[in-house]
Image (cartoon, rainbow, N blue to C red; front, side, top):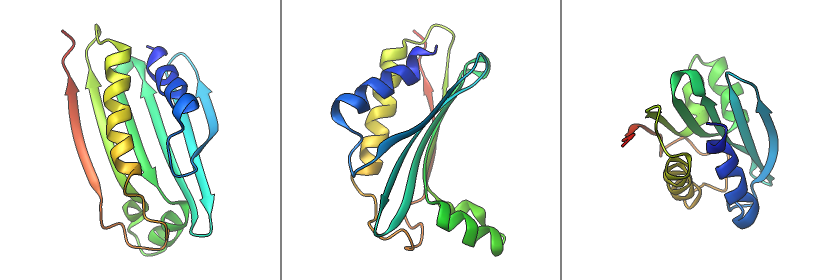
Length: 135
């Protein structure tokens, strides 16, 4: 299922994830793969991370701010760093392109409303769970 993140990376390379996010890092191993996009501007740094654990048939996408993580950790509320988070559970026969498209659609919606000031409170926290029909 390495194709899932490869599909996302190809899409973003062709169209850009929007809001000046650029590919910052990629890790690929047998049991874990991860890509991260970063935006740095006057408002600070925002990160879009997508991780895939093939053995567990899960993909997680998160849009978050490192500055908020540091501040939140100091007050015991690090979850405030995450603006959006979504998990996908998929079956063994899932089509990577179909799942990739669903992830792209969700992430594109997030990025359409990314606040420009990274110090704003995480007022749009969205945690959801999707199950992709393997059929």
